[in-house]
Image (cartoon, rainbow, N blue to C red):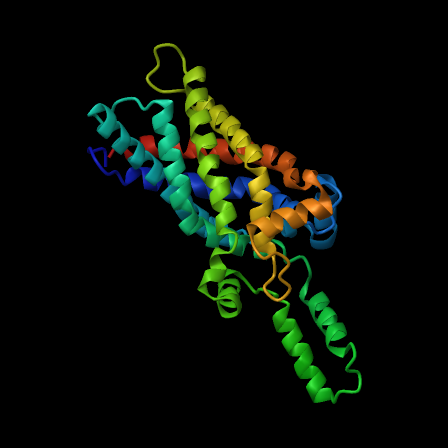
Length: 322
């Protein structure tokens, strides 16, 4: 695994790091998503309290099974692609893939990584967000469907009314899980529906990954002991956490647009695209809407990224012993 050229150990270490980070960060990710989608929460604490009162602690872990399975694979792609591209850049520029990468090299590899990551990340994020936004229980959904179905058709026969209720419940997209969610999206919106919000994700991730990996490299160099070949585990943890907070806070405006587009239900679509979402959000809620969830992003970004980078680096050391 330690041979020159393409390496698979970066992909394996990225998988471990990704799985570890999901478990740490998912509860706050749920809060962030609900705040950004604009469901009437007054603040971060109001969202947390409301979620807990209505759904108990389980509400914070909605949609986690899918990210655990997929974000591990997603981060495997991100870290594996980034590391291999960075080595390719060094080999082309300096004639040796082991040559230390400059910040420009890191930034270039990061931005290419952000571009490629959307192909996998957009569907993963979409399903996660649709499941996280599902705040109503089934009983509430049937009650709502019943009220919708009988509005203006109270004289309809019982059989027709029952069919109308069943159709309304189906159309409310009460997802039974990730697989049902994917099937429902494809059925109602086509395959392209899985990439709703993909353009906004590009706006977030292309610069976002540059502001993720570059600060990590800088902080690792600053925190590394004099004469040490590599930073200590504590330095990796701190550097990763700081880089994650910086990246997520600066990416918040694009993340708000992406979350709103992806949370937008097919049957009650509110936004026609990125520009319409930006203009509509600004007109109705002001400039502050694009910084909604920034506090959660800063707090959540630290432990998630700290765990990610530490698990990645330790796993990489383990795999390269073979």
